Length: 191
Image (cartoon, rainbow, N blue to C red; front, side):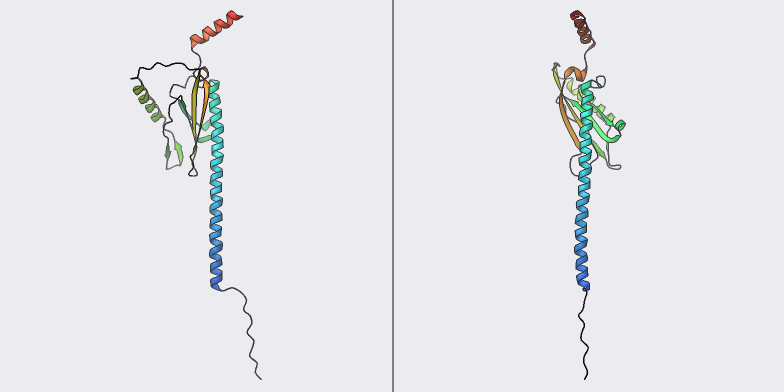
């Protein structure tokens, strides 16, 4: 009597099952890595925004302390934070109701480019247009000071922080020499 060998139960996966599993795992890994990359870019943007806000507060404090009396004029002031170790962070201050100038990105290096000559030309052009008007400058007790700090852009979110503070007029522009002499004379008389 011949007995046919029993077929053994087959164990394992077919090639099609393995391929489908690999595709599913691969797509899941891609989505996870994309999510991690987006989280990293958002964290970098948030970090830069926090630093920009702190630097803007520092600069507003310096304006309020009178450190820019000689440099500041009716249209504003600009610079960067290279001395503080943030070379790619650029700031611009405008006074009153003045608007910020447009900034441009340097595509080759991916850093913010600031053309100081362009800024000066635009200031001079703005003064020429304003000279035609016969408006008197009236000294107000406070001056609105706005600062914009621009930093490298990693995401689609805006790469700038804008703060505004009302600062006493004399702290922004300083006192005239005549006013200082009058204040000292009044102080001497009171003693």
